Image 1 (spheres, one colour):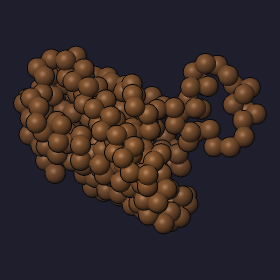
Image 2 (cartoon, rainbow, N blue to C red; image 1 turned 180 degrees about the vertical axis):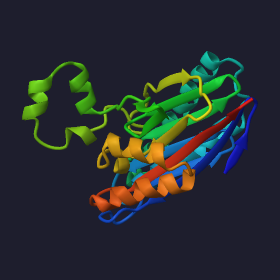
Image 3 (cartoon, rainbow, N blue to C red; image 1 turned 60 degrees about the vertical axis):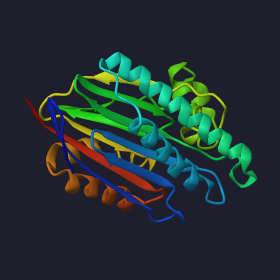
Image 4 (cartoon, rainbow, N blue to C red; image 1 turned 90 degrees about the vertical axis):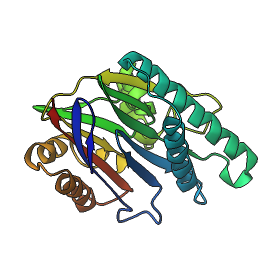
Length: 249
């Protein structure tokens, strides 16, 4: 996929894989012109799959019916409002259907704007940028990250269970959620990676950086990352979107 925007030209490729352990794929991704999103659903009886699909569907619909704000800050505010509305919609859906109670999903999205890049996210699906080195742009909304930020290192060491996967924010689980947003200015040669935790929890940042550095094709790079996640066990669904900023003129 090639998207031409003034002043950006972006190449993109996305892929999702069920992995080697899970019985179903509850990850969803979308590439639509200048907008890219990854969702990682959670919940039993296929409700995680419903959550991810409905969240992405609602997100694309809301962005499709709105005019993108002119400034970067205004666009970031707009993205936060849209994510809040998606959350309300999903939460109300779960209240109406007992089979969907407790469903939720992560959402991480990236918008190429005329003035730069706008990122919004809820949960632990990550967005990275590679520019000479790998940089994680999103900040995980997990119990582990919260404890780490608070300096509770002894508690982390003593903690039992997978605290890295316990979300402190998700889409659809509560009536109100606070999205995180940020903006940045892209440059020629920049690469962006959106991924679910089926990649980031099992493939090291060094290996991710090596793929982004050494494999120029979006498609080949995305496939290599998925293959590596499966080589180390494929314990979760794996979703990857690789973006190349190939021109700024």
